[in-house]
Image (cartoon, rainbow, N blue to C red; front, top):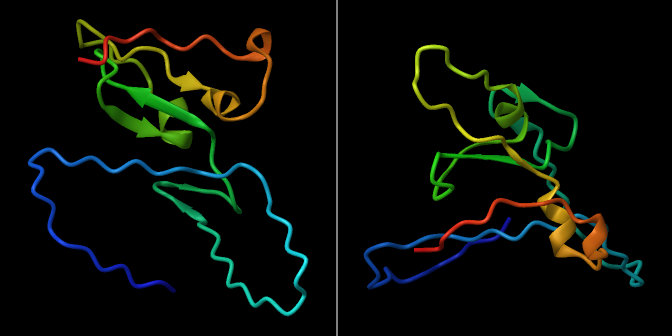
Length: 112
C-alpha cells in the first residue's frame, strides 16, 4: 500500500490520466517481495481479474461515459433523438508495436 502526498494544484480544470499495462513484468530478483493487488470489482459487473478494453464516449467524444462491460451492454434508447456513438474498442493496440494495418480505426476528434 502506497501513500501519496501532493499539494493542491493551481489549475482549475485538472484531469488525471491513468496508464494501464497490458503485459506482465519479469523480475530476476527472487528475494523481491511484491504485493499484487487485483481488481475484481468492475462496477455492476463481476470478473475474475479483467474487464473489456472498451470506452463509451458522449456524442462529441469529449467525455467517457462508460467503460468495460458497461460500455458494451448499454442499449440504445428508443426515446432519445440521438444515441451515443459506437463504443471504442481495441485501442490498446495503439500502445504497442503493432503494424498500422492491424490497428483498429478510431474516431477522428477535434481536440478543442
